[in-house]
Image 1 (cartoon, rainbow, N blue to C red):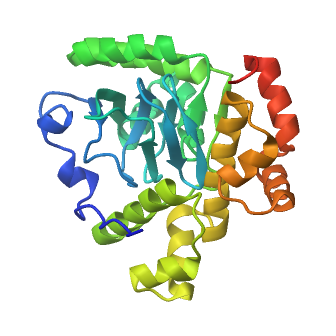
Image 2: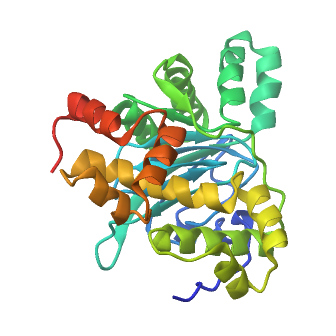
Length: 306
Protein backbone atom coordinates (compact mmCIF):
# COMPACT_ATOMS: atom_id res chain seq x y z
CA UNK A 1 0.00 0.00 0.00
CA UNK A 2 1.94 3.00 -1.27
CA UNK A 3 1.03 6.60 -0.69
CA UNK A 4 0.45 8.18 -4.08
CA UNK A 5 2.83 10.90 -5.11
CA UNK A 6 1.13 14.31 -4.73
CA UNK A 7 -0.05 16.00 -7.87
CA UNK A 8 2.01 18.71 -9.46
CA UNK A 9 2.26 21.56 -6.92
CA UNK A 10 0.30 24.17 -8.81
CA UNK A 11 -2.54 26.27 -7.48
CA UNK A 12 -5.82 26.40 -9.36
CA UNK A 13 -5.00 29.79 -10.85
CA UNK A 14 -2.06 28.09 -12.58
CA UNK A 15 -3.47 24.75 -13.75
CA UNK A 16 -7.10 25.73 -14.12
CA UNK A 17 -7.10 28.77 -16.36
CA UNK A 18 -6.71 27.00 -19.68
CA UNK A 19 -9.75 26.30 -21.90
CA UNK A 20 -8.92 22.62 -22.41
CA UNK A 21 -9.55 22.03 -18.69
CA UNK A 22 -13.04 23.50 -18.97
CA UNK A 23 -12.53 27.16 -18.02
CA UNK A 24 -13.69 30.01 -20.17
CA UNK A 25 -10.63 31.86 -21.48
CA UNK A 26 -9.74 35.27 -20.01
CA UNK A 27 -11.43 38.19 -21.69
CA UNK A 28 -14.60 36.28 -22.56
CA UNK A 29 -16.50 36.84 -19.30
CA UNK A 30 -17.18 39.53 -16.72
CA UNK A 31 -18.25 39.01 -13.11
CA UNK A 32 -19.19 35.34 -13.56
CA UNK A 33 -17.01 32.60 -15.01
CA UNK A 34 -18.31 29.21 -16.12
CA UNK A 35 -16.44 25.93 -15.77
CA UNK A 36 -17.34 22.34 -16.54
CA UNK A 37 -15.24 19.20 -16.46
CA UNK A 38 -15.38 15.43 -16.21
CA UNK A 39 -13.63 12.97 -13.95
CA UNK A 40 -10.76 12.33 -13.62
CA UNK A 41 -9.42 15.84 -14.16
CA UNK A 42 -6.38 17.75 -12.84
CA UNK A 43 -8.73 20.22 -11.12
CA UNK A 44 -10.05 17.49 -8.81
CA UNK A 45 -7.88 17.89 -5.72
CA UNK A 46 -7.87 19.52 -2.29
CA UNK A 47 -7.59 23.22 -3.10
CA UNK A 48 -8.94 26.70 -2.48
CA UNK A 49 -9.24 29.95 -4.44
CA UNK A 50 -10.28 33.54 -3.92
CA UNK A 51 -13.61 33.25 -5.72
CA UNK A 52 -16.97 31.98 -4.54
CA UNK A 53 -17.86 28.77 -6.33
CA UNK A 54 -21.32 27.34 -6.99
CA UNK A 55 -20.71 23.67 -7.66
CA UNK A 56 -23.29 21.31 -9.21
CA UNK A 57 -22.54 17.58 -9.54
CA UNK A 58 -24.30 16.07 -12.56
CA UNK A 59 -22.86 12.52 -12.54
CA UNK A 60 -21.11 9.99 -10.23
CA UNK A 61 -21.16 9.54 -6.48
CA UNK A 62 -18.41 9.87 -3.91
CA UNK A 63 -16.92 11.83 -1.02
CA UNK A 64 -17.14 15.60 -0.63
CA UNK A 65 -14.77 17.64 1.52
CA UNK A 66 -15.58 21.26 2.43
CA UNK A 67 -13.46 22.77 5.20
CA UNK A 68 -13.71 20.27 8.05
CA UNK A 69 -16.86 18.66 6.62
CA UNK A 70 -16.82 15.18 5.08
CA UNK A 71 -19.94 13.84 3.40
CA UNK A 72 -21.43 11.91 0.50
CA UNK A 73 -22.41 13.41 -2.86
CA UNK A 74 -24.48 12.18 -5.78
CA UNK A 75 -25.98 13.75 -8.92
CA UNK A 76 -27.84 16.93 -8.00
CA UNK A 77 -25.45 17.86 -5.19
CA UNK A 78 -25.38 21.69 -5.10
CA UNK A 79 -22.88 23.59 -2.91
CA UNK A 80 -21.68 27.18 -2.62
CA UNK A 81 -18.17 27.62 -1.20
CA UNK A 82 -16.64 30.91 -0.10
CA UNK A 83 -13.21 32.47 -0.69
CA UNK A 84 -10.22 30.40 0.46
CA UNK A 85 -12.43 27.62 1.84
CA UNK A 86 -10.67 24.33 0.95
CA UNK A 87 -12.81 21.79 -0.89
CA UNK A 88 -12.73 18.69 -3.05
CA UNK A 89 -15.08 16.14 -4.60
CA UNK A 90 -13.70 12.61 -5.13
CA UNK A 91 -15.83 10.22 -7.22
CA UNK A 92 -15.78 6.59 -6.12
CA UNK A 93 -18.04 4.92 -8.71
CA UNK A 94 -16.36 5.99 -11.94
CA UNK A 95 -16.60 3.65 -14.95
CA UNK A 96 -13.45 2.67 -16.79
CA UNK A 97 -12.37 5.62 -18.89
CA UNK A 98 -14.01 8.15 -16.57
CA UNK A 99 -16.98 10.42 -17.30
CA UNK A 100 -16.96 13.37 -19.72
CA UNK A 101 -19.06 15.68 -17.53
CA UNK A 102 -19.24 15.58 -13.75
CA UNK A 103 -19.17 19.20 -12.61
CA UNK A 104 -20.88 22.41 -13.67
CA UNK A 105 -19.43 25.40 -11.83
CA UNK A 106 -19.88 29.16 -11.60
CA UNK A 107 -17.18 31.33 -10.04
CA UNK A 108 -17.52 34.97 -9.00
CA UNK A 109 -15.51 37.41 -6.94
CA UNK A 110 -16.31 38.90 -3.55
CA UNK A 111 -15.28 42.54 -3.92
CA UNK A 112 -17.40 43.37 -7.02
CA UNK A 113 -20.60 42.16 -5.37
CA UNK A 114 -19.93 43.94 -2.08
CA UNK A 115 -19.03 47.19 -3.81
CA UNK A 116 -22.16 46.95 -5.97
CA UNK A 117 -24.33 46.15 -2.92
CA UNK A 118 -23.17 49.41 -1.32
CA UNK A 119 -24.72 51.29 -4.24
CA UNK A 120 -27.59 49.01 -5.24
CA UNK A 121 -29.86 48.15 -2.27
CA UNK A 122 -31.37 45.09 -3.98
CA UNK A 123 -27.98 43.38 -4.13
CA UNK A 124 -27.58 43.76 -0.37
CA UNK A 125 -30.08 40.89 -0.04
CA UNK A 126 -27.26 38.55 -1.11
CA UNK A 127 -24.83 39.57 1.63
CA UNK A 128 -26.09 37.09 4.28
CA UNK A 129 -25.70 34.29 1.71
CA UNK A 130 -22.11 35.34 1.07
CA UNK A 131 -21.40 35.13 4.80
CA UNK A 132 -22.91 31.65 5.02
CA UNK A 133 -20.78 30.57 2.08
CA UNK A 134 -17.66 30.96 4.22
CA UNK A 135 -18.78 27.71 5.88
CA UNK A 136 -19.94 26.12 2.62
CA UNK A 137 -23.69 25.83 1.94
CA UNK A 138 -25.45 22.76 0.56
CA UNK A 139 -28.85 23.48 -1.02
CA UNK A 140 -31.71 20.99 -1.27
CA UNK A 141 -34.56 20.85 -3.78
CA UNK A 142 -32.92 23.40 -6.04
CA UNK A 143 -30.73 21.32 -8.35
CA UNK A 144 -32.98 21.22 -11.43
CA UNK A 145 -33.64 24.96 -11.38
CA UNK A 146 -29.99 25.68 -10.66
CA UNK A 147 -28.89 23.62 -13.66
CA UNK A 148 -31.29 25.51 -15.92
CA UNK A 149 -29.89 28.83 -14.69
CA UNK A 150 -26.28 27.64 -14.97
CA UNK A 151 -26.84 26.49 -18.54
CA UNK A 152 -28.38 29.86 -19.42
CA UNK A 153 -25.41 31.63 -17.82
CA UNK A 154 -23.08 29.44 -19.88
CA UNK A 155 -24.77 30.48 -23.13
CA UNK A 156 -25.16 34.18 -22.31
CA UNK A 157 -22.72 37.07 -22.42
CA UNK A 158 -22.57 40.64 -21.22
CA UNK A 159 -25.61 42.10 -19.51
CA UNK A 160 -27.73 39.06 -20.35
CA UNK A 161 -25.29 36.82 -18.43
CA UNK A 162 -25.40 39.17 -15.45
CA UNK A 163 -29.20 39.07 -15.52
CA UNK A 164 -29.23 35.26 -15.61
CA UNK A 165 -26.75 35.13 -12.74
CA UNK A 166 -28.86 37.57 -10.71
CA UNK A 167 -31.90 35.33 -11.19
CA UNK A 168 -29.92 32.33 -9.94
CA UNK A 169 -28.52 34.31 -7.03
CA UNK A 170 -32.09 35.25 -6.07
CA UNK A 171 -33.02 31.54 -5.99
CA UNK A 172 -30.08 30.79 -3.69
CA UNK A 173 -30.87 33.73 -1.40
CA UNK A 174 -34.50 32.65 -1.03
CA UNK A 175 -33.80 28.94 -0.57
CA UNK A 176 -34.65 27.99 3.02
CA UNK A 177 -33.78 24.30 2.72
CA UNK A 178 -30.03 24.32 3.17
CA UNK A 179 -27.31 23.38 5.64
CA UNK A 180 -23.94 24.81 6.55
CA UNK A 181 -21.14 22.29 6.05
CA UNK A 182 -17.89 23.31 7.74
CA UNK A 183 -18.19 23.88 11.48
CA UNK A 184 -15.41 26.45 11.34
CA UNK A 185 -14.53 29.05 8.72
CA UNK A 186 -11.43 27.08 7.86
CA UNK A 187 -9.08 28.97 5.56
CA UNK A 188 -6.03 27.33 4.07
CA UNK A 189 -2.87 29.36 3.65
CA UNK A 190 -0.56 26.57 2.55
CA UNK A 191 1.77 27.14 -0.37
CA UNK A 192 1.53 25.24 -3.65
CA UNK A 193 3.61 22.28 -2.48
CA UNK A 194 1.64 22.08 0.77
CA UNK A 195 -1.66 21.95 -1.08
CA UNK A 196 -0.38 19.22 -3.36
CA UNK A 197 0.84 17.24 -0.37
CA UNK A 198 -2.41 17.44 1.60
CA UNK A 199 -4.34 16.59 -1.58
CA UNK A 200 -2.32 13.39 -1.92
CA UNK A 201 -2.94 12.51 1.73
CA UNK A 202 -6.70 13.13 1.44
CA UNK A 203 -6.89 11.03 -1.73
CA UNK A 204 -4.95 8.23 -0.04
CA UNK A 205 -7.15 8.19 3.06
CA UNK A 206 -10.31 8.32 0.95
CA UNK A 207 -9.20 5.19 -0.88
CA UNK A 208 -7.80 3.26 2.12
CA UNK A 209 -9.95 4.44 5.06
CA UNK A 210 -11.27 0.91 5.76
CA UNK A 211 -7.79 -0.58 6.14
CA UNK A 212 -6.00 -0.87 9.45
CA UNK A 213 -2.95 1.34 9.44
CA UNK A 214 -1.72 3.75 12.08
CA UNK A 215 -0.85 7.40 11.91
CA UNK A 216 2.71 6.35 12.72
CA UNK A 217 2.83 4.19 9.57
CA UNK A 218 1.47 7.04 7.46
CA UNK A 219 3.98 9.48 8.96
CA UNK A 220 6.80 7.07 8.14
CA UNK A 221 5.68 7.03 4.50
CA UNK A 222 5.62 10.82 4.48
CA UNK A 223 8.92 11.16 6.36
CA UNK A 224 7.24 13.37 8.99
CA UNK A 225 7.17 13.19 12.76
CA UNK A 226 3.79 12.44 14.30
CA UNK A 227 3.67 15.79 16.09
CA UNK A 228 4.47 17.72 12.90
CA UNK A 229 1.94 15.69 10.90
CA UNK A 230 -0.78 16.24 13.53
CA UNK A 231 -0.36 20.03 13.45
CA UNK A 232 -0.14 20.10 9.66
CA UNK A 233 -3.15 17.85 9.11
CA UNK A 234 -5.42 19.68 11.57
CA UNK A 235 -4.48 23.04 10.09
CA UNK A 236 -5.27 21.85 6.58
CA UNK A 237 -8.46 19.86 7.21
CA UNK A 238 -9.85 21.11 10.53
CA UNK A 239 -9.79 17.54 11.89
CA UNK A 240 -7.37 15.41 13.79
CA UNK A 241 -6.14 12.41 11.82
CA UNK A 242 -8.31 10.04 13.90
CA UNK A 243 -11.43 12.19 13.54
CA UNK A 244 -10.89 12.51 9.80
CA UNK A 245 -10.65 8.74 9.30
CA UNK A 246 -13.64 8.16 11.58
CA UNK A 247 -15.70 10.65 9.58
CA UNK A 248 -14.79 8.86 6.36
CA UNK A 249 -15.79 5.52 7.87
CA UNK A 250 -19.07 6.78 9.33
CA UNK A 251 -19.93 8.45 6.03
CA UNK A 252 -19.48 5.13 4.23
CA UNK A 253 -21.47 3.38 6.95
CA UNK A 254 -24.37 5.79 6.34
CA UNK A 255 -24.29 4.93 2.66
CA UNK A 256 -24.36 1.19 3.40
CA UNK A 257 -27.15 1.59 5.94
CA UNK A 258 -29.27 3.46 3.38
CA UNK A 259 -28.48 1.43 0.28
CA UNK A 260 -28.15 -2.14 1.60
CA UNK A 261 -29.80 -4.43 4.13
CA UNK A 262 -26.51 -5.60 5.67
CA UNK A 263 -26.53 -6.17 9.40
CA UNK A 264 -25.22 -3.21 11.38
CA UNK A 265 -22.49 -5.43 12.82
CA UNK A 266 -21.31 -6.27 9.30
CA UNK A 267 -21.38 -2.61 8.31
CA UNK A 268 -19.18 -1.84 11.31
CA UNK A 269 -16.44 -4.17 10.07
CA UNK A 270 -16.98 -3.28 6.39
CA UNK A 271 -15.96 0.33 7.00
CA UNK A 272 -12.89 -0.42 9.11
CA UNK A 273 -14.01 -0.47 12.74
CA UNK A 274 -12.96 -3.54 14.72
CA UNK A 275 -15.22 -2.94 17.71
CA UNK A 276 -19.00 -2.58 17.52
CA UNK A 277 -19.24 -0.54 20.71
CA UNK A 278 -16.69 1.95 19.37
CA UNK A 279 -18.53 2.08 16.04
CA UNK A 280 -21.82 2.87 17.78
CA UNK A 281 -20.15 5.50 19.95
CA UNK A 282 -18.46 7.23 17.02
CA UNK A 283 -21.63 7.07 14.92
CA UNK A 284 -23.64 8.72 17.69
CA UNK A 285 -20.95 11.36 18.16
CA UNK A 286 -20.84 12.30 14.47
CA UNK A 287 -24.47 11.80 13.36
CA UNK A 288 -26.32 12.50 16.61
CA UNK A 289 -28.14 9.17 16.51
CA UNK A 290 -27.40 5.44 16.57
CA UNK A 291 -26.90 3.42 13.35
CA UNK A 292 -30.26 1.73 13.98
CA UNK A 293 -32.01 5.08 14.31
CA UNK A 294 -30.27 6.36 11.18
CA UNK A 295 -31.45 3.37 9.14
CA UNK A 296 -34.97 3.73 10.47
CA UNK A 297 -35.10 7.41 9.47
CA UNK A 298 -33.56 6.65 6.06
CA UNK A 299 -36.15 3.94 5.39
CA UNK A 300 -38.97 6.26 6.43
CA UNK A 301 -37.73 8.91 4.01
CA UNK A 302 -36.40 6.88 1.08
CA UNK A 303 -37.81 3.38 1.56
CA UNK A 304 -35.83 0.18 2.33
CA UNK A 305 -32.38 -0.16 0.77
CA UNK A 306 -30.92 -3.08 -1.05
